[in-house]
Image 1 (cartoon, rainbow, N blue to C red):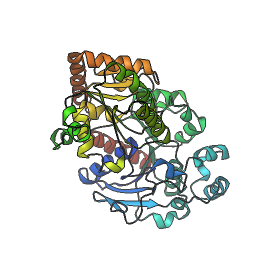
Image 2: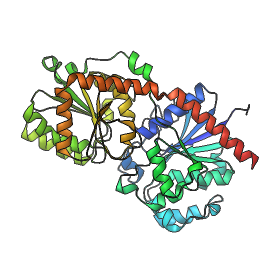
Image 3: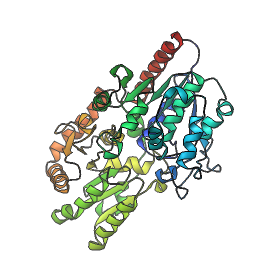
Image 4: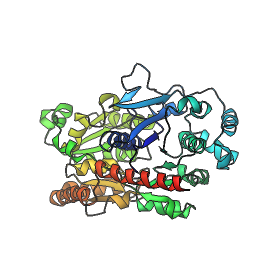
Length: 434
């Protein structure tokens, strides 16, 4: 195909919203648009945090934000979330749209998707106005949010192929819902990050031929060339800059393992008081309560808690500096389809600790480039952290092995974008020939 592709990316949120799924689409959109000459437009909700997807009290990206209409030269169309429409009203609106009928979905499927938000049904209600150009393909993410269904409806309305990268957290009970996989069956193609995710979806009835494995990536040169700060000195003081630091980076909730690591801290500091702990990412009420308990019992504990408001983005110097200066990266999560943060740690040859559940065992090779723990096991987390602290040469070898894995598996955003560009071309050609 010689003509320039017009592709619509339709994630749930977009930068400055922060999560692995958002970053996946941001890097993919930017590289395709800048380096591979694909014309990319982005539709998304105006939600900034997860609570805003369903609740008006949540944070939203407002028009005065410099990223509201464009991010790094990409045009962004953020649809305001309507918090007033009931689920039944949204069902009625969706069922009366042009592209919905051929999907043949039940009302129960609709209810289970709609309840997660964001209600941006304006996208399909006024699709003619929103279609500023003729798109060749729609690529959306992620289950279980409503924009995934809206993407399908637009695809049917415009008679173009649809692709979903679901980031399916298949070991999280919240995702074990047949209605979600029923939605995925309607896409022309599903992109999984690991073979474990693919096998789960095959077991749920999605045809193997409709699933491609495309991993996450990293801009290694940015991590290696960014001028960093003295993170430990700035946040813990000069006297503590040589102490070992454990780092967690991600959504600070139970599913990600942030609470499990917090609960391990009193046991770890009982053995070694000279440990530093840094948590980076959006906080939750449960995390803040647990952190308050720990600090109340031990006022001398060395814990730094940074939220996105403390950072300027994914390539923030403070975050990169934390990865560079930590001794161990710990993210014992059961809700990761891949785990970009493991790559960020390996960029600086740091050993990692993940949970032996979900997709993580395919990314973290236990004993080679990191260690795996039982999910939510304080004892196991403590044992594995202590092992790495006591066996520094072994920990160093694991970190180096992780760095080599990035290169061996070609975990680079440029390479991943080229692979997805080929997928786009292939599925568009197939659609045009039918």
